[in-house]
Image (cartoon, rainbow, N blue to C red; front, side, top):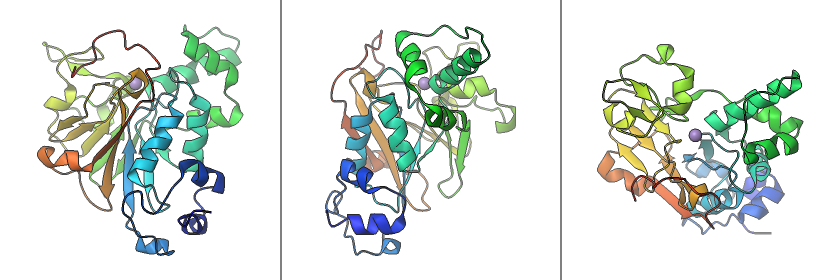
Length: 277
Ligand SMILES: [Mn+2]
């Protein structure tokens, strides 16, 4: 048994099986495990859109040297398009990670509810149709419990899947926009279309950590960080790793707290040129 395991088991937050799968080793990030978890600095590890890429999620957690003191927070779109949605959901449960609701989770929940009620529900692509067949009750309960946002005041951060409309109070945000917005159109209206990112315009607090807008590089803005780096489209899976009680550093210093791992393959064609390429 690897030397890091006793501490992980003491904390009771991760199963032996998970720890072995993650191959967590005390030397991954140069951390010294003393056997006392209280001596490890807690970090928050924000993870971009996983889309069923379970192997890459494991790769990323290995790369950051996940310990039982760390908290994992995902920006949503855990499901669909990639090869192993159920593996992702299982791993997220085992990690006791927090996740916000993405547009793909919303779509699956709506389809599931419609089918249960005898309606046909929204039209689905092949990936979503297959998921409707294979997800079990535990998976559905997990998806249905996902919140629209998570606030982490200790980091000065709000996590949402897609973003917020700049200049609009949180209480007045349209939930559909929170899971779909990409840009601000020339006439100033928010839209899910590609264009000038809402995050370029946003200069408010809290700092927003978001996904949804897949690009080849993380999107670093003064008051927002986008970490969907297109893993399922053959890009990278990215984490923002913050020590306890710290806010995201300024844009020029922020790359130092980003960790990414490459996709093992391209699982899906993006269908257009990936922004940043
Ligand atoms: Mn999305």
